[in-house]
Image (cartoon, rainbow, N blue to C red):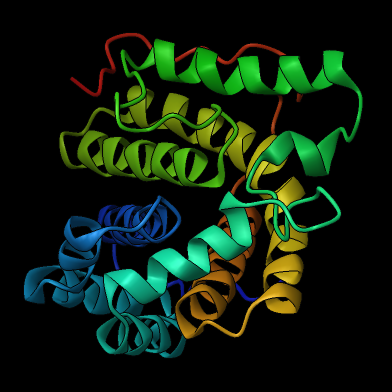
Length: 241
């Protein structure tokens, strides 16, 4: 995990909004790519938002590499890379890269894997969220956990802007649990696997940005007081709908 830390200038609201923007962009990179997904990621307003967020968090170089790679690819090429990495088993029956947290954190222990998946599902439920009908992956898929991080960061920014400090503190606690018990446990290993398995500039740049973002975010949060295999509860009155 990177030892990078976020700059300490700027407001907390701006910093959490920037975190949300980068988590959202990375979640988009790691879903199944099609023309619409790529268009959303490369739209001028999206690129502008990513650049502004990266400037706030000191991640300009990593974000620019990702934006350049997205500009230079197309949906067909990205789909081919995605399928080669995540979508089709090799001749030996294994996947090049497994995008599921439990595969990295609990291995072959089915009971613990189910509990890990259930904790993320519980967090979705706590925020009155559900998976899109088009998203057929498990709850511990990397893209889903990144999107959860986006939602939590955006809610925290909104709470601070509204002077709802108790809600913001509750959100910080849940963020710490997601980072401490989930993302920081498996994303660095997944990033290593990605670098070993592909030369696609989009996924290489995304791995670098995600690892550095999660590492700095983990360092910026207090240690989690929630057990890794316990259900997570959302703060009262906080809803993503």
